[in-house]
Structures are given as C-alpha cells and as structure tokens.
Image 1 (cartoon, one colour):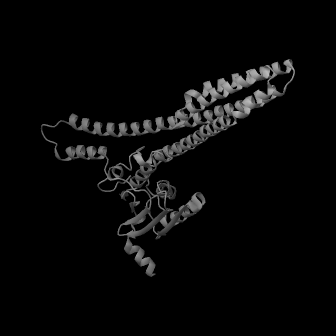
Image 2: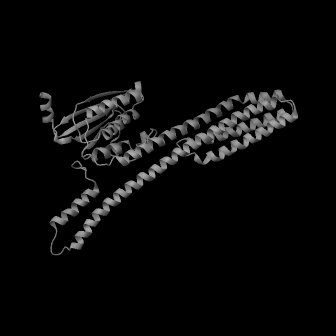
Image 3: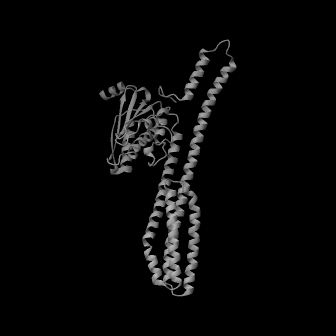
Length: 380
C-alpha cells in the first residue's frame, strides 16, 4: 500500500521513528534486546490498529442490524395496532345495529379479543421507540388511543341500553379524533420505514468502509469511463431532482473501477443530500492529468460547511449540526478518504457555508504515466 506524502498515519510515523533508531542510534549502550523491543512495539501498534478498526466496524454493523430488525418489528406492531383499531370501529357499529342481547354479547366477546390483541401490540412496540421523534409520536398516539377507548366504552354503554341514536351520534362526533389517530399511526409507520432504510444504508456503508482499506496494487481504471457510469446511475436515481455535469479526461489511475466508482458516487450523492432548499442541486465532476497525478474534482452548489465542520468532514460517523436530519450513517466521506489514501492519493475539501463544496482528489496514475505521455498519445 502506498500513501501520499504528508498523509502518514500515527502508527506509520512511530514505525519510521523506531526504524530510524535501528539504523542510526545503535551504539555500545544500546542492546539488541532494546531494538527487538522496539520492533515488537511496531508490530503491536499495527495489530492493535487493525483490531480496533475491525471491532468498531463489527459492533457498528451489529447496531445497524439491530436497528433494522427493530424497525421492521415496529412496523409490524404499529400495523397490527391500526388493524385492531379499524376492527374495533367496525364491531362497535355492529353492536349498535344489533337488536338482540345475545347478538350484542357475541360482538362484545369479539371486541374483547381485539382489545387484548391491541394491548399486546402496544406492549411489544413500546420499548422499540428509539428513532428520532418516534417516542414523542408514540406518546401522542397513546393519548389518542385512551380517548378512542373512552368513546368506545361510552357508545357501547348507550348501545346496551338500546339508545342506538345516541350511541351512533357519539361515534359520529368522534370521527375527527379517529382521523387524527389514523394520521399519527401512519406517521409512526413512516418513521420506521425511514429507520429501516437508514439501517440498510448504514450496513452498506460499514461494509464498504471495511473493504476500502484493501490494497490497490496492480489495479487500474479509466476515470472517464467511471464518470460516465456515474452519470447514468445519477440520472436513474435522481431524475429531474438534480443535475450532473461531467468533464473528465481519459487516463489510467491506480484504482479498481469498483472502488473509484464508490468514491465518485459518495461525493455526488453527498452534494444532492446536502443541497439548499431553494435551488436545484447541481453537481460537477471534472478530471484531467496533471504531471504525475490525475486531478479529480467534485463540486456542488449545496449548503457548504463551517470551517470546524470541514476539518472533521472525513471523520467516521461525524455529522455537523445542520446535517443531523439527513439520511445515512455519516460514513460516506470516511470511505472516500480511506479508498483514496489506500491507493496512494489524497483528498481535500474546499467549502464555504451557503456556497457549496468542492472535493479535490489527487490520484496516482497507473504504469508511470504523465501529462507528457498523454500529450504524445494525443498527437499520434
């Protein structure tokens, strides 16, 4: 693995220092045991680094999987609650229409079974309310459910006394409250659908993050070809929601096509995700050979970032205050940096709050190419 100058990790700098000691500081007072201890320390640093990253990715994936499973369970239970409420309303009408006492008793038996099922669904769902705004929405739904039960009890009491007209009036007067409860239930389902989708995105991001450190040795691809595929994916994913311009010159860079495609997709998707509400998202991809490197820039006209947020933009799971409501796991830019640096390149961010962001990538060319080489090929 080759790293760009100035992008060494702390462990690499420590290793370099200790190796320097082995070359320059050996003297009568330095024993072979001390040198072996230093080399052992180097190995331990690398082992600990790998173990920490592996454990972190594994635990994060477990949390994302749990969130996904909880969201699906929540959708199932909230749908069950909605079904039981609808069933209770139908049975209440049947009770009012029924003229025989035996018939009313049979309906009440059915109502009792439905109420038990509803309360069981509430019991299962309650502890799972962990998504943003979900607990507050559930508390609102619970208050509405209490009101719903009171209306039901009052209507049934009137119906038992054969005051059918008053019972029906009681149910009719509560139609607005029922509609509010239906909307709250629909909101809970929507919250959990979003949670499930975010969990899937987080799992995908974590798997990509784990893969992103793989060696790039021997890999190569043409950025122009990758950008063309991104353009097609972009049109299919966003349609008229956003616009993409790409001017990318041909070359061969030292990255696999799949990983460079992931880098570009993460960056263009980032531009759409953090767009300004009042303008259409516009994303630009520009690439050219420059000396011994390939310059690739991805720009957007989105929200931009504060300087302190830009400094931490590539930190895993970091989300600025203004980005808390956006979907995703906060790993997209971390994956970009990890992939780019694993291939010996570098990435920088230039941004201004309210005026968009540009990510500037410097990528190594494959096979010792240069701008002179490309100039000669164009002349031929």
